[in-house]
Length: 263
Image 1: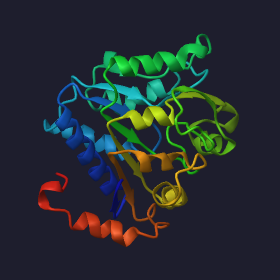
Image 2: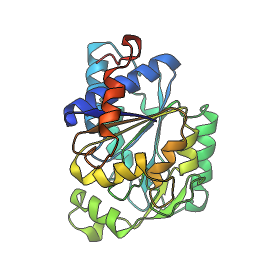
Image 3: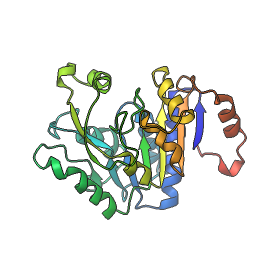
Image 4: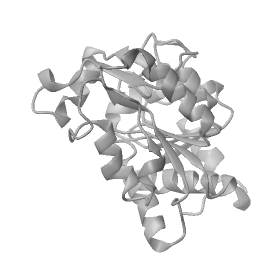
């Protein structure tokens, strides 16, 4: 696990995008990218979009798989992850909409939604680069605390904390769905590379548990300690709970030039 500590949110976006672009370039034009929703990756998406506009990054042949979707929201709802991914990822990054996949959150067919999504990821050859955020309770995707570390895509019940955190996107918490379909922790670990971005003091406790705590289902993101190629990009506020913060800074600042990111 590589930890990169940045001075602010903007720099998190720049470094996160540089790492994603670097990993995508190694795969080639048909790279398969895993995409997350929420506020954490927005700065990264904005920086990737800037690279696309500048002509230094071409994702027109790429495929994408979203991490999760609410159950019961129509895909036309502005807070459905289908529509959110369209607005924040598909259109700005120039992806082919036909190659952008989101879990099926319709109640009809819900019992097979997880396996169908797993099959689609397998048919695409697996995810090459998985972009992640982290919830204040340590969840990644919608894998809430106590999720199995080997879990696959399935329906999950959202915790009250997650519903309260997401209520800012709705008129009231009563409108926040109680259920979702999410990639499992085992599914996320299958991605060849992972880039997690986070900022703000509200994520400090979760980040510390993820990076320096034990690998435990009570902090689902801690499973990334087992990932062979995980990069954690955070700002000073999100890093404020890390005991080894100075060491992580020293490691990154003293990387050889050939390992530095092109920002």
